[in-house]
Amino acid sequence: MKLTRRGKIVKETIIFFLVLLGMAILIFGTGALETYL
Image 1 (cartoon, one colour):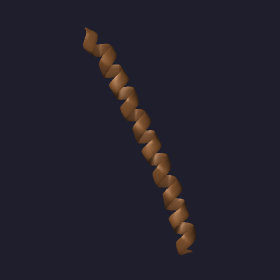
Image 2 (image 1 turned 180 degrees about the vertical axis):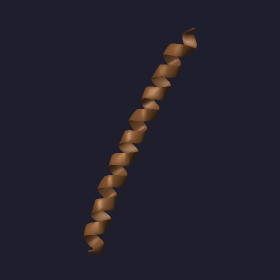
Image 3 (image 1 turned 90 degrees about the vertical axis):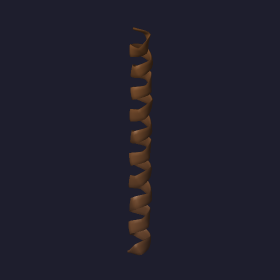
């Protein structure tokens, strides 16, 4: 049952990186839109 704690940590880190990636895409996307417009 040691895998449950490790799996939870892995899942949380994956969610954290996905949120960071989404924020980066939003920031770069809006910046690109402003430069094109």
